[in-house]
Amino acid sequence: MIVRGRDLEKGFDDKCDVVVVGSGAGGAVVATLCAEAGLDVVILEEGGYYSPEEYGRFRPSESLRRLGRESGLFPIYGVGDTPVISLMQGKAVGGSSLMTGGVCFRIPDDVLHRWATELGLDDLAPEQLAPHFEEVEKRIHVEEVPTYARSRSTELFVEGAAKMGIPMYSMRRNTSGCEGRARCTFGCSKAAKMSVDLSYLPSARERGARIYADCRVDDVLTTNGRASGVSGVVLGGRDGQPVHKFRVHAKVVVIAGGTVHTPMILWRAGIGTNTTVLGNHITLHPSFRVSAIFDEDVRGWDGVLQSVYSDHFMDDGITLVGIYSAVNVLAAALPGVGREHLAYVKKMRNGAFFGGMIHDEGGGSVRPHIGREPLLSYRMAAEDKRRLVRGVGIVSEMAFAAGAKEVIVPWFGYHAFRRVEDLRDALANPPDASRMECISFHPLGSARMGVNSRLGVVRPSGESWDLEGLYVADGSVLPTSIGVNSQLPVMAVATKIARGLIDEWSRFPPG
Ligand SMILES: Cc1cc2nc3c(=O)[nH]c(=O)nc-3n(C[C@H](O)[C@H](O)[C@H](O)COP(=O)(O)OP(=O)(O)OC[C@H]3O[C@@H](n4cnc5c(N)ncnc54)[C@H](O)[C@@H]3O)c2cc1C
Image (cartoon, rainbow, N blue to C red; front, side, top):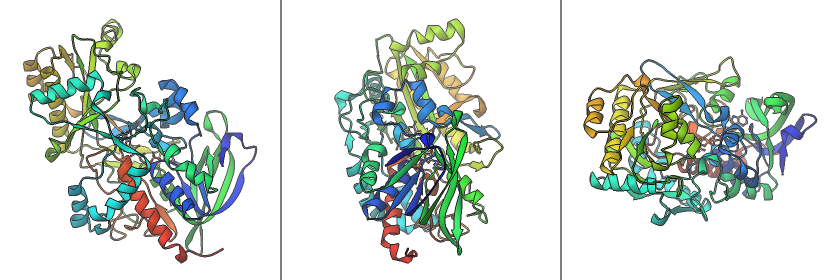
């Protein structure tokens, strides 16, 4: 059952075994596995519900407004000399899973080994997580992108890499029947991307789970020192204002609001507030993109949005990815104003886009703020600024190697480079980081797991150190950046948390 909160004429009370807050990559997995184990489940989602037929018809701008939080441009406030970074997050039934590029990576073994040796998180060692990765990969249909589905933009990326001796590999993505329409981040128009609204939630619904859309959870209810439910508001008014109240009573509460919003709920409920970790240690995987103009007709929109990557520079924390998004979004990122910008927009047919992301050290904090959204700040580490410049340099050189006539780096105030020598001069003296532009899709770590209540907000099992019966199962529990895209990692960790919760079900009060 799916209830659209905006259709409700009054508030509601419900009762269940497990209430899950947030229906994204983490929440949908836990909710579905609990429902499949025979538990009575309620899912509460702040965003709206849109069927694949509905979101598949949205124009990109409409999709950002309806599926994205803050229309897909959640601001991150740079502290000190930090690049301008905007964060994209989903806010709808399916969460950010609806907006992914479909890219699927497991957490690299060296990251898991570091978690085990440096943070004591043996439960997340590679052999422990492997079965959970396998389970999720099967369910969301992870497959390798065939070479014929690559766009010309990607082929140029591969050609440039080959000329520089950089190996490239085909991506694995969670798709079935993808036609390469290159609009994955706006919701697949063919329902070919196996986002959680298609791969998990239907099974939860079949087993009686109730999904309430437009319902924002504000607080956690407690009884006798244990979590016993949540309360919040139905967002039914114009522009999503609160109109009614609801309460859901449950034996177990699972918070999966994502890295930026989960800490807000915990803060209000006074959970994890004794630690210095709640809301801190946020990593972002800052991503960069270089635009390259070729003489040939590239038509980069014809093919899969992201289909190759290289981990050649992973030792230095840099992953390279070929990218292409909706033409109007990419066009907006081209330089100049007025006639100069128009001249670039007219060259879009000849444009290819090369990108990458860095495995950052962190430096993000989220705090409650006076507005409806929290304040997210980020201080980029000196080492990460160096990586960012190096990453931009590598993909720019690749573009020239592939034959680009103009290369545009994401640095404010810089004009296109027409000669590789000029680019190298600029890279030798890069601007302040605050003149660089990045985007983030993978915030992680604000309610990290830890082996004690000083190091973590939650235990390795996902249960809170402070409040029995309260679990967190989303990107916020991953303790560091992972250097690869985060949906599959979040889902595998959520699977592990759900399986543990189900195994321990007899611990929770009956009735
Ligand atoms: C544009 C885009 C592209 C991406 N591409 C990829 C990719 O190709 N590959 C990849 O691996 N990863 C990708 N990601 C990242 C991936 O989507 C996330 O890592 C993953 O979805 C995080 O899962 P989550 O459960 O932590 O949060 P989300 O999936 O964001 O889910 C959180 C949900 O909780 C809801 N919520 C928050 N607060 C409340 C509240 N108080 N009450 C009720 N509900 C609440 C939110 O509205 C949201 O729906 C992408 C993300 C974006 C935005």
